[in-house]
Image (cartoon, rainbow, N blue to C red):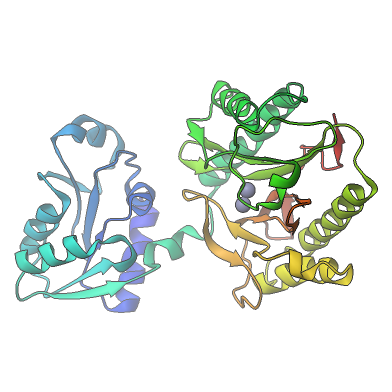
Amino acid sequence: MKQRLRAVRKAMRREGLAALAVTNRKNVHYLTGFTGSAGACLISARSAVFITDFRYRSQAAKQVPPDFRRAEHTAPVQGIASELKKTRAKTLAFEEAHVTHAAFRQIRKLIKGVRLKPVSGLVEGLRLCKDPGEIRKLKKGARVNGQALGETAASIRPGRAEADVALDLETAMRRRGASGASFDTIVASGPRSALPHGIASSRKLKAGDLITIDFGAVVSGYHADTTRVFSLGRPTPKGEKIYQIVLEAQITALEAVKPGARCGDVDKAARDVIRSHGYGEAFGHGTGHGVGLDIHEAPRLGPGVKEELRPGMVVTVEPGIYLPRWGGVRIEDMVLVTERGKEVLTRSIPKELVVL
Ligand code: ZN
Ligand code: ZN
């Protein structure tokens, strides 16, 4: 935590910022360890204040390290305004993507004479490369994902609803130590598998369905993310063919993951394979994304992205093919970029097309 506060101050110096209000909950969690829903920080060169309200008094005392002075205010905006006055800063930087217009107007009224400067991605930039503690949490999430999917596979059969499978999976993740699901679990079967984000519905599974399951466990605030595909009974030749193309694209993209590789090149590796088989139009999303305190965070593995992968980044690799009315296939792993290459965190989860 100490190191993170030091890093944020360094970034502030680089940007010439005297004071920074951190209001993004995940950024507050990252800097202070506070996991409650009402907290903000005000950081300057000399002071660091954690602001919350009465409800979180004891939680903050337990979680927030002594580098932060703890202050109680009825609302974060009032807290930031009154704590800012003590710093005498003439400019306040704020996270523009995480401040509502109403809050902006309110703070402008409360701190007349102080210039408001929007910033974006400052703390998020520090979160790009995970430290060993964060990597441990992401690895545990990946492990929970594998165990939960293994347990749930046995209950996937014709007649059960997608939502039943999602519930089993979420229960299994919770039993294994997850605090919840990383996002609404996707169980997309038959023609619904053509929906890249087909959240589990009441549709009943049928023999012959391909079923895309995209899910994740949250462990200590960190999000796991994995997609696997099952076939209820023997797949059709077309199903088998599409699966093999996506698998080839996914493995090719994984091979491209290493320090110094451009995010856009990993995307291109997957896209070229899918295109070469004539399905380029059917792969309409990026190849992957960073995961951590947020389910989707930087870097983005999309076409043309020049940002380079660095050791400590944890990203997903998840190409797919989606054919309206027919169905779709996506395969997704989490991968840690290491000094020498990569480590696939979800490698223990079988990746061949599992026929149930
Ligand atoms: Zn996913
Ligand atoms: Zn994902």
